[in-house]
Length: 196
View: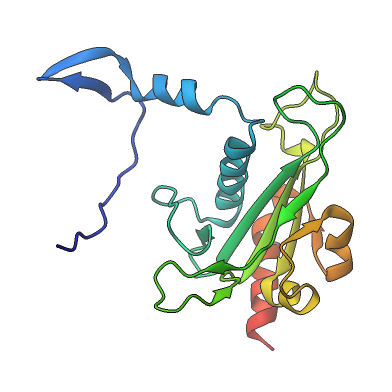
């Protein structure tokens, strides 16, 4: 028996948990605060990076999907892969973390073959570029550095490579972009691909 995907709508946060028609005194917002407040955690920071890029590019419609072959799609149809890294983590560290980003090709979950490929049009690398534990704040966009590169440039420069470090990004053609210009640069990089 085949089942279609479930249509998920956005929650407001004030929906109550319930049982047998009775509401409990905790709501979705309580769950979100409990599960998603640690923005320094690798997993949550990655989701936050996706959200920041979604806001910058207009790809924030609907709800986040975990099952696509790329992270985001802009209203213009630009497929984005978003990767994040940081020097500071939420756990005890003996030194800063090494900054690297996953660029490994992935298998198409819906294809009949097991061929691996990079499936986006553009990569956006998001570095939480702050080194003071006392003042680190992932909601402060001045603490982030964003890099944008066409996937085809990455394919040409680093075919088969699984990760890339920060100092290699500009060498392969990634552009450093302030947050307020991120959406425009993503579109410009995509337009350059289409005009070739």
